[in-house]
Image 1 (cartoon, rainbow, N blue to C red):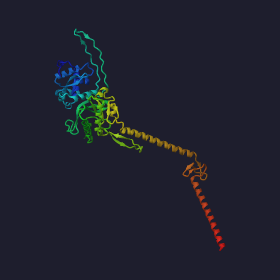
Image 2 (image 1 turned 45 degrees about the vertical axis):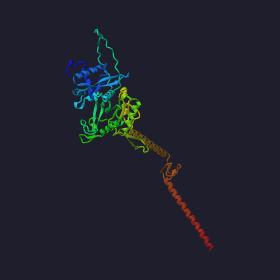
Image 3 (image 1 turned 90 degrees about the horizontal axis):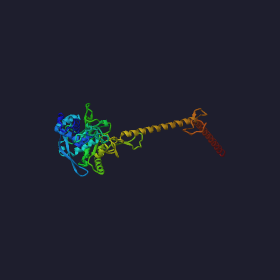
Image 4 (image 1 turned 120 degrees about the vertical axis):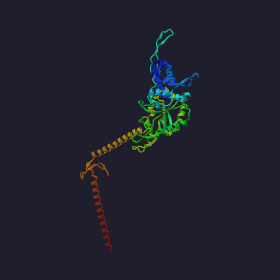
Length: 453
């Protein structure tokens, strides 16, 4: 884009390239936002302003809109908005490393209108990114008399740990419930931002920024549209059904669809923010709530079970203020269905899914096996003690246990077989004796009757 003389504001090639990179991602931003995104280590914002002005002189960026905010003292402050031109899209595509056809629009109309939502998205990406301030080479200053002033050492601000790289972000991404990514059908939606950061354990994260300008029901309907998009399937090269979204982004090892982060950007009281989060939660419950499966094969009386998140969206929420203060790895996330604020890793986890249930089932199986082993050992020990106390049957020589089907037996007694035989013999002898006695009584009676006759 020309030699050194082409840059009237004396910006460096590095600063111009970083500004193009940032605008290629966020599309519209103030100089202050651009500084936070790519040059937070500079002394002030003038370095970025000079880069923007030089790029404007080259026809690749423009400033067609302004935004304002009110200071703590109540004074309004205006800021220029910077966006790419059509020619600038090609230059930015080179910095971003994407084809021009995937770069989207110039955001010119949004910039003219002040771009409040786009600026909130830019702030959100910066809060996720938390670009670490890098030291810049100090520039020596001269006094009016031409004397060089000593360079003062400068303390760089500290920022929390960030997530991903700027090139891992996309904005205004079409999510077609039907049609294609280039020509989505009616009823499709556009994600405010999408982050791909596999190096940080986040293969894909969809982000929606809420400025409290829409009813909670509209935001909940967006979540439903996300679910419709995630439910869509297509055929792979083998003719097998695969999720349509996985043809663009990598799948993760987590159950369910990719996570959706709702970032509430408007600065309101914690009570108002929480009430809005809860309203959207209640209106979108079918999209994120797991399905309960009960039962245990090792404990039929157990009410234990697990939640199946296979066809649900992990919805995590936070405020922009919390995200800016603590960074994306801090305890700033409330996952719908979880009880408290958590780190990103814990918020994306499903502690009540089949993994935890299977661990409990394994523990129950281990305990059941241990109990059965204990009972078997007790039976074997009882049998051993019985055998130690056994004696040979005095009649037949068989082994006699101290207790059997006949109950407890006195030591030295016959076995149950011999006892049964002897009891039968004894019973038979007693029956014969009784019959003989009865015969004798009959004979006596007969003799008496004959005498009387």
